[in-house]
Length: 224
Image (cartoon, rainbow, N blue to C red):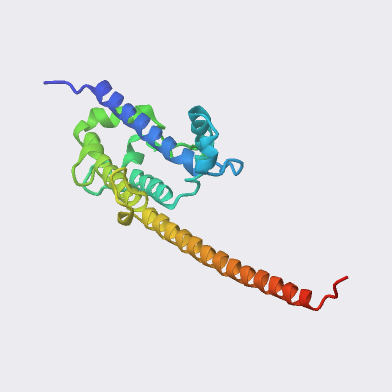
């Protein structure tokens, strides 16, 4: 004759919603952040003339907007929203929408969720707490398992694109791009050096020819 602790389950669901909304916020912020074009990346020469604090503040401004409209973050947010609306045919309640939980009505919230009907949620917990809990925790079809899979996939895509602190340049796409650009810069430096040497030799030959011409002209100048 044990009683279900409806309030405890209700509070855990509220905690999940808070954590989910915090994650939505952390993903939406860089997606909407505008780039500050007044702060381009610093060169080594510029850094040499600045203090560490100045460099830190400059680079914080320079990084703003770098992830604006990033495809990986946009895709994982979209997938998270789809998961929230997923119908689970193996569960009595089918989905969150049947226990009083929906996305917020404000478009600017970017896909946050809320308890729209508290009484409906508490009634569902009281009538079948196991089914309510399994909507979230089921290993195969639970919302948490699906969200973890989606975020893990996004994390792997980020590693593949941007690498980790321990990654070699050739193991991620941005590293390969940087290496390619550095190779192009080195090639252009060599080409410019070759052009400079060629012009210098031509200039030297021209100077020699002028001096020779002047010397020959001097032979025919009348002396007084």
